[in-house]
Image (cartoon, rainbow, N blue to C red; front, side, top):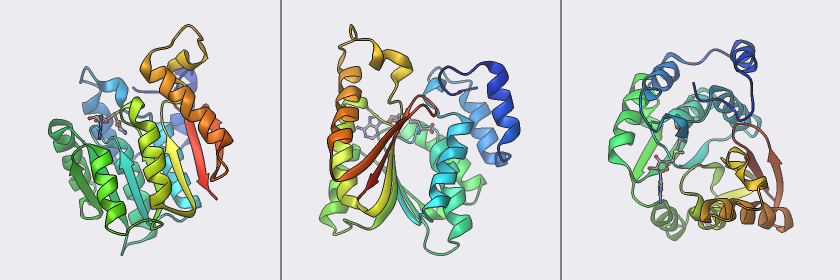
Length: 223
Ligand SMILES: C[S@@+](CC[C@H](N)C(=O)[O-])C[C@H]1O[C@@H](n2cnc3c(N)ncnc32)[C@H](O)[C@@H]1O
């Protein structure tokens, strides 16, 4: 099972037991994805529970996600959106893979949230730019970024335009399995993640907090 960085198997089980039960479609998505060689890309169940709680805390109705894979994080969020807003909930899901998002659509259909998820298979910067040009700036409550790490800065800037004041953007993998704390690691992905953490800390447009949830979630609240 994909789990948060640094947790023992005992703690992973403890968290699973302490948190709300997963929807059957989330269980299926997690178990079937575990058979793929890319399974580690999936967020952990405890991170899904955290994201759902964040959506509930801010009563999110309109959200965007960059990096869908087989659909676990979008499904965890969409279930909460639809529960809170049976009418008007919306999740814009961006990914470049037809293969993986075909699987995602199946889980979304099974959970009956496919009607609130709009999937765009294209580079996410293009999709987000189109939404900005369509006048949707300031209309989103929540964003989740979990795709190519060198693209994070571009998603940050576009996401800040799309979010309403008080809206929240979450960036995944900000600890990068610990590599961000290794000064010898100057690979493009690690460098990009470090740069975003520093930028968000100094950015007066947001209140930013770096947490150790999952593989490190950077929480940015738009002022
Ligand atoms: C870490 S996985 C996302 C995991 C997902 N959030 C989950 O809960 O299972 C990263 C995804 O980003 C997608 N991706 C990579 N580059 C992208 C880009 N430029 N635009 C949109 N999606 C991209 C990949 O196809 C992949 O599905």
